[in-house]
Length: 131
Image (cartoon, rainbow, N blue to C red):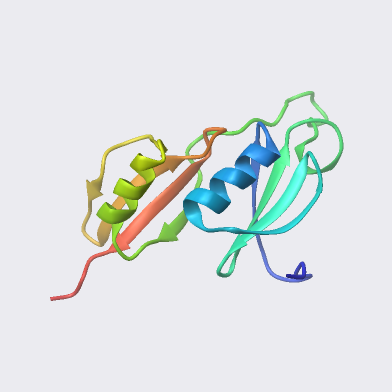
């Protein structure tokens, strides 16, 4: 798979890039696009490219000019649509996945917040079926 030169992507700061690659490829069916160094990789799923970066000197994870360091976690998240949320949650539970909340039944669909090994969020979402 070649690296696109246009379009967008999401960057996640992670504690360990190899561990993050394993999580996203095994749990969420991402594909590795490139992994040129221990501190950086690009993975993809459908049209979503996810840049995994270890915090530290060089590249997208380096400290800010004021000395602030980048860290994983927070509440921003990628949003992945699944066909059967309850089945997906059951499969992830069998793999000992960590969820931040319980299943939420909303007006447009159902969702749950999955944490990657660094604490970054993935919102798994199933649209409500029209009746």
